[in-house]
Length: 195
Length: 195
Image (cartoon, rainbow over all chains, first blue to last red; front, side, top):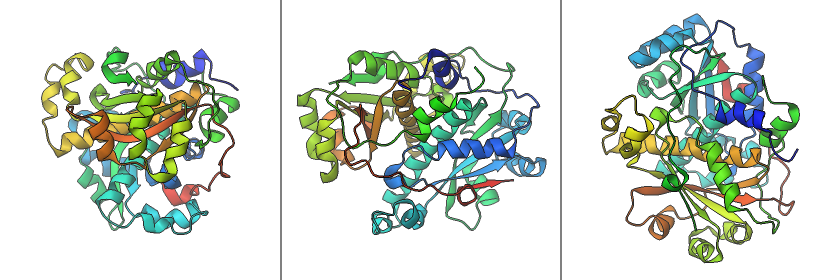
């Protein structure tokens, strides 16, 4: 295949929208695994793949998440079939002997500290974007959100670990509820320079 | 369209590879604009779209970039038809009256400071991932890299602006040169929890 056709480009980019309303149709665990089996292939530095995902699906887990969401994100997140908490592991380097086997010393390239934390955040964020696109590619809708208390979510879901929350993504089959017209984007020349 | 077919999923995720070798086939400015016209639609918080891209294409521009690359990234980057410097604007909020018109006060949600800088970095990184997937979707290969001196690139390409470099992406038609076997990924249970 040389390139995606127009309908495929519409599905993952041009007509895909951040959803605020959700149909009751559930998201099966096999769909969650299929999302992972796609997004895991997205490129990261040194194949570090630092993202760690908690898929909040049960009512009990949603109730643990709810208090930490900003007011505008509570109701729609509780209605979503699943909300993925996209985290990243500050100690991702411990997995490098498995993930980057041709460079046995790679683990030592990432000593604890701000540079390694920035790398974990950058690459974990890339993986969060791959997750959004993978979900869309599989026919689901996504509703990413930054409006929540990261420290509260960390204490509730990642206590005692080296994982930190980044952003969250509601997933399911979106409805037209509270779907605003698509907002403008910057013109090419406002965001790009060709040298 | 309900979902992408297997060949499409292979193109953007499963068989796509980070390339280290590049054919001489150039990348046209229209292809660069087509990449932007896709990735600009990827979701960001408050539609902030803070990514600012310098597409390094001419020999003169490549020579400005070369000294700032880590040794292992120099030769392959000079051979690539174009190298995108993915930056992010710390003052992205100034564009919010255009980008988020239904909330006239949105600009004030992002005062200068660390929280706003984190938001710029997170959302600019998401856009960098969308750029990679958009390039693949249009039939190009991508070679993202973090191995360069960010401060040096900022001084060379973003002096006097509020834009900071994040990572770079070589783009073109990849070859098999120095293409390693695909490295392992974490098993589902190593990176995911369903609650």
